[in-house]
Length: 180
Image (cartoon, rainbow, N blue to C red):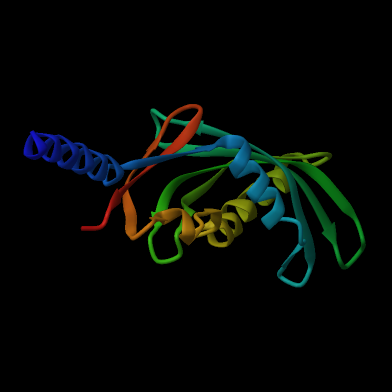
């Protein structure tokens, strides 16, 4: 009878150990990414030593079927030459990828989808959009959107690594697998 009891306890312990070795999924919402973006974009950006660019109030949407994140931001562009202020909105989209070295979700292939500058029309608006396309893709490519805490990838002696990232309309779902 003791051997049978031992076998049952041993089996239960093995099952519990296997359960702790399963994949883990972390859900990252658009609101979490918005907060991180707003924190990262607090400082103004100097452009060509002529303009000071401030981006704020990120509104993030995940487009699961297109596998792209879309962000609308408030824009404040100040000319350092004549102190003229331009305001408006910019919409940027991009693919997301997990950078295993930095343990971060970063923006790839950013594209300025739309730029609306108050009071800008015609050729000036076209030029502003062209500059936004050029500078935006360079400045935003590789931007860290969300960092994973290394402590979250270790439970006891089990270390986890990224396995899969899936985007739905509501959130990012990161799956991590135990390192064997």
